[in-house]
Length: 290
Ligand code: RIB
Image (tube, helix red, strand yellow):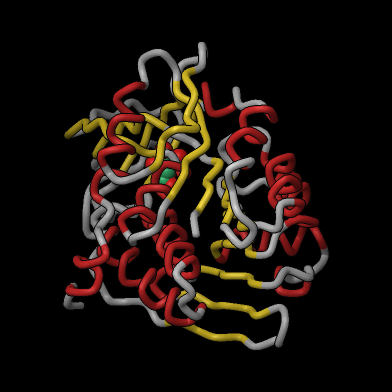
């Protein structure tokens, strides 16, 4: 089986700051690092590191070839990443000493995808494969509809949160990933709790409190505890969790086990600086002592 990821690819510029800047404040960073990121790329790398065959569908600009090379080095199938005339997406990430972040995004090539590109990629997909999207590319609803028509298991990570974007894919998705804040925002927009929207599986991450799974078929709710770690950088931890859950489901693991493994991967991730470049592999996740 395979995971098809319609996902963003960003160049992350990470600035370590003594504190988050206040409106109007000028603040010097103590360090600057550049790396591979984007919620899509992070999920693809996490899925590949967790042992899945991940086909990334996306685009970079003329200066983004290194991002594609790096995805390939990390085990991602990059045949469906196109080169666009738009600049590669990038993210300006401020990280404070507690590991909390603030992100400014420039979408660039991530918004230059076409329905034809997605159709061509998904023509190689098989029923039962997973299709995942996040809210950093265009063509989400079109892809979700195609995925549903092809018999794929369609997953959506509602980040960065936009109520209209989630509502556009709701009719087609089988699996929804949200954090606590996004779950509350979605409830406000729809008037229904996420678990009452008729989705087969809803996963809500709860930060240091772990994660919760709502099984839309049985109505069962399961809580997965979090590992205790001292965070230095939370960037990409949620994406790592999602990629690990999907890779485990793709291998046929039950949801509770998939989430428990993903929670260990996410916990390791917050102890590292960076995004796609530092996502742990399955052995590190299994061997980690918390
Ligand atoms: O979720 C973390 C990611 O958000 C970063 O890698 C950045 O590129 C933004 O997309």
